[in-house]
Image (cartoon, rainbow, N blue to C red; front, side, top):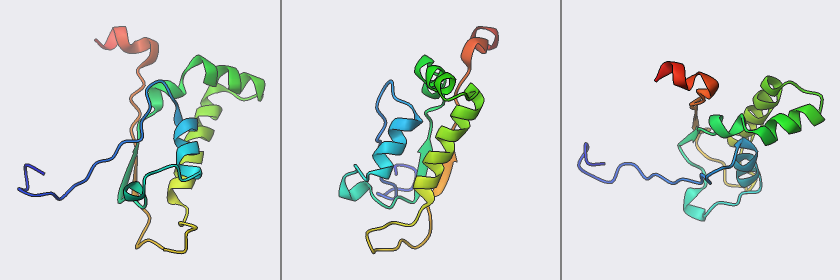
Length: 113
């Protein structure tokens, strides 16, 4: 907004520390958003680090999946709920731009830094 000299962009965050894409999916799927946050133009999903959490690994193990497949499933669920048409009878102009930010460095972070 400072760059363009006006209120062009409004940013809302629904991030909760220590949660993963499953939490993001639940918030979006059950429409647990304030009215002004609904029907965004851009959605950024950056839960990658927490998607690799031990609880996700245990959930994958219980369901007979690899961690990779479980994380892919989580991400697909988020993408599907973001891109589905609204069910409130008010169609939006077009689906939002969806950006998935994979910020997971895992055990390799010491080698990178």
